[in-house]
Image (tube, rainbow, N blue to C red; front, side):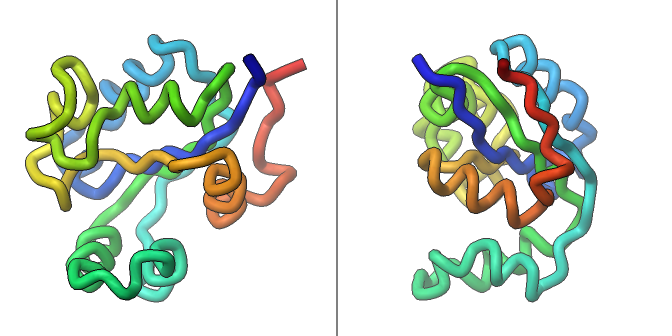
Length: 143
């Protein structure tokens, strides 16, 4: 397997509920290495730019409002097969449909407020990581 990077975002509901440390612990316990991490509050225009791919969906406005409503914690993660492994760890977008033991199943409350974002491909992971971090801010942990 190849070492990959993916972007995770602990969403405003995760920060508001005080779950940042617990979720990061679970991510690290699953073998992911943190390569970059910060806390920030997205402006409406930043949230619109990040989620532009979803602009035509009827729920776009609600997503933008939510993602700009409070602090979030974007982070770049690294691991063999990171994208698929991370998506398995976090579970389905709708917490009610997520497998038992996944982050979204345990902590999410709805499809819109599901605690965490994870990139859906290696390409998305790279593009999304560079939205939040410059190349020099991402620490290479793989040899």
